Image (cartoon, rainbow over all chains, first blue to last red; front, side):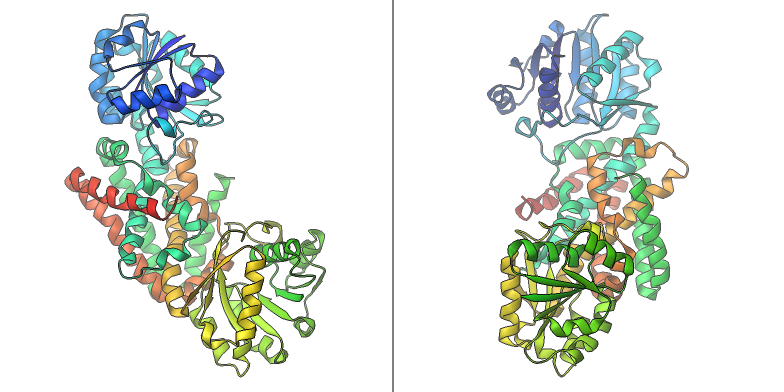
Length: 280
Length: 280
């Protein structure tokens, strides 16, 4: 299948690698406005051709939008304007509500499938692409009924080809859930990194003691603002709700410390330990 | 060298494994009040002998205290009472201020060396022991001048034998630093786990979307309260200070979201990105 990937960074590049290895994408065009990224994508042999011209999507059976989510919003009408009724467009952005609204507002919106493969790293750009990024992970397809069945089927086959399982959510439900299980983790990491970096100004040796636990909780603080600012902007309301609840949770621990109520503190830890059900 | 390890869980057990492999510990006695742990430690071949009798430390050149930090406080006078002036006692607890105070208050306190190997996992018990847990990591020796030079040297050789680098801190400084780079990470993870688990009561499918980012930030929420409650209790004041600063950091992001001030939000992320200097 001939596939055009717009935005050939961490996600677009990893998809390209996985599609190639799976044999699912036999000709891949990488479209990117960033000349350095185009060059890197060719040097890394992520795709067969690169271009900056959006017109190139006319040749593709499937167009994948893998840019930051603010750029996706702007691309959707341009891309849908260019395609015919046999082509399929999908996005892989971390927010779905606004994106589906814009896509569904277009007369060719039925050719669009909104998805979110739940995988990533704190790195970005073509050089961050990993062939195994998606294998064994889960992807979301949202508002399935709004898209043509053949379009959904094409997207399902693609995800299956790269080893992903598929779940179906409503786009609004997706945005609330990802606020909890992805977006808030990033804000929590950014905040933790800031807290410790600010302390470092007076305590130069503080990072001598940073071990694996610290690394794991602040890893996401390395994430690219170009990716994350548009996500927080588009999912602001849900993220705000979670942020309030999270501050409330942390404040509970604070209050118990102030009161030296270590029995209740223990009860909260035991409750939190239930996360073992989820992680393994 | 004949070494007694009191508390043969994650840390004590991992030390045992590493000491054996390094050839540094040619006879290891595991002392533990928990019968199941003693049995497990033998079944896993972590040590040469197990016992519940503290008197067994009389045979050892070096005694390692590797229990939760509240138990360490109680053990220090008992253990120092039992040893002679050639034996050495060290602890590997995550707090150092109270422990050094108690040790230094004993007439044989000069035979005691306070340490904190900066390594661990979210698991506990003998079965969690890993031979490579400490290799390539950093350990702290605190208040070095309070201990006999030969005792410090014995402890330094042990850490070098298992592949650790050594830094020297004052115990109070250690407790402030670990509040920032270890203790707060755990509270942040516990709180994040609670936040999402509470939401799950209404949103059953929320964890379908939990990916690697979430896993990394809540991993520590699996940690054992028996280990962590005594740490928070002993380091309460420093942890409270950090908790206030952390809540303040998170609140900054909240305020910017409320104001939709995404330019300043971006500036904060770019600041947080500097954590790349530390992690790699």
